[in-house]
Length: 225
Ligand code: URA
View 1 (tube, rainbow, N blue to C red):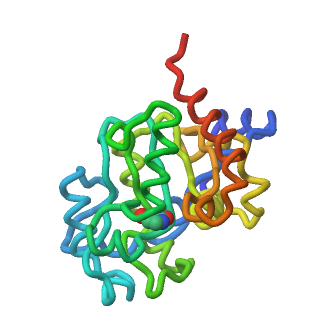
View 2 (view 1 turned 45 degrees about the vertical axis):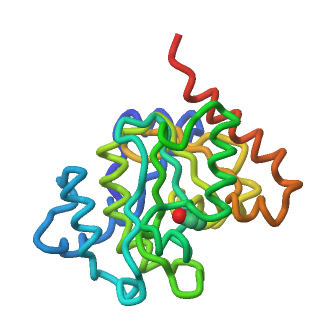
């Protein structure tokens, strides 16, 4: 862990947690694919590094990598877990049934899918849609970290337990992470946690809580007065 700066100390004193992605701060960087240094890569170089990535075993089972999609000037970054079968086939995150619900959730706060940026913790599909392993998430995190640096979103929305717990480095149940705002990373980007749309498809009663979370996102995205 790096030493906290004055700002972090103030935030800490005020009880506002500042979360820094593990892997970016603590882990030894993995050698970059094809000589690309993802810590300084531009969008094209980063996409290419992901496309060629063989850093973990998941590359063996993928049809293609799923880099991310959306506006590179988006204010909102949505982060999910990992590609599923449809995403692996099409090379785009959240394109299955859960993706359709995500589009509807965004529309409810007057955002089109094209207005936001959508990425996952993992860029490759885990076999049989199993949960990502923590070493896979750690290996893939520098790519997401660079996406966040390039995008500089005003707000991050973490969807589902896996994304939320990984980004916040917490094992707190999602029900206690949602409904509030965290400060994420060196830029202290406001981060809101909500339920994964795939969970909402199975448990529609949770949609009212998800709506509460989306209203927080909407409020955070409001332009400063
Ligand atoms: N679930 C996710 O978390 N991400 C996707 O891209 C698709 C489904």
